[in-house]
Length: 198
Image 1: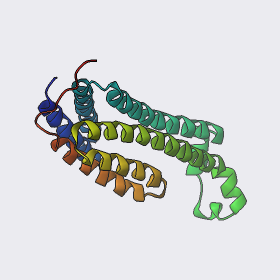
Image 2: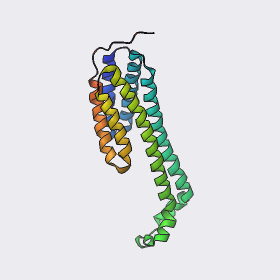
Image 3: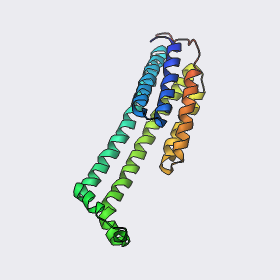
Image 4: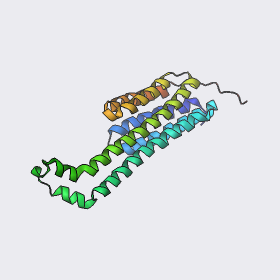
């Protein structure tokens, strides 16, 4: 793909698919398809502008996002194992409502899972912030090359959403950022002056 028009179409459609995928039953498939489209668009912009950092920053964003998911799953899995695994599930299923009114008994039963969930949340949050930093760098570079300042705004909102995601308001901010991303890609110019090789 050498045309900025193709990058505009792939990026805009990809961002739209990811947004729709977040709220529909076929979510994971649409989300992955959208992500592939955005990768294609970012790679094209990287080639057209001859700026490899555009693509490498987006790739780092993706890697740290995946690491966040993997870290959360692994930490919760370890916490589940430490709590007793499936024997813990059997023990919890036999509980009566009156059995967990005692704080010591509650902590003995759920303490490992609570600590694991908190650690998973914090580690995942830190990795998401790092990934958002890379995305911001990528979109700042795209904004400089294309003169579409909405990419800078999108990167800023993604970063703000990542920071505030621990208090859940970040989910709304990330939704706004994803909407801006769609508009930013569709706002790309029809032609882009390509830098000359040195």
